[in-house]
Length: 203
Image (cartoon, rainbow, N blue to C red; front, side, top):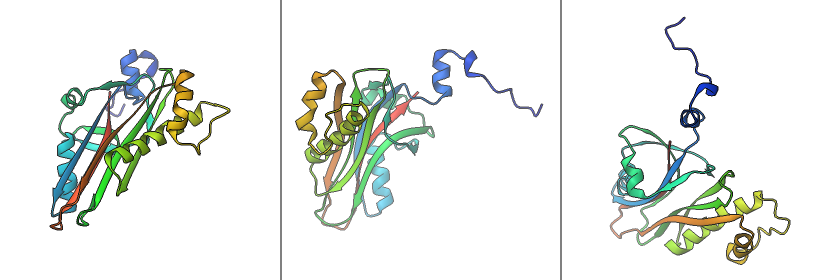
């Protein structure tokens, strides 16, 4: 009537088309980067270049790992990106120009054993934390959020994940926890440095 095609019902779409229609990602890859420049914005852009995602229009989304989502190696995921592509991602970012300041960004992920259930991701950015500390912290956050949704009557959120993860892994409820972390130390010349860590969704 107005020159536009009629709306398509999800019922007539193939499973792959229906997945895209509902905007549920089927693939994800993890990446990280660091950039340094006298301008903060340029340091961010350089960090995105280092991560391989600078050519995309990034849309920050909250932190649900879709059911059955396949994890791709970074180099394979980057090959699927197209310049100007609207790209959904969970991203953590930290910037500073304070000389000798240690900064870090991390995305933690917790994936359930049941592929029909969603998992969790957490974004964490921090000052004065090493890769290992920031990564463990982000991973702990994601794992605790996932465990808290599983209805474990003995779940204690106050405990460190290291204390409780074996219990839930033994119960075959959580299959994997991981993190993608980037840190750097700011130089002494007054330049800005930015670190980014990201989970990039694909369809």
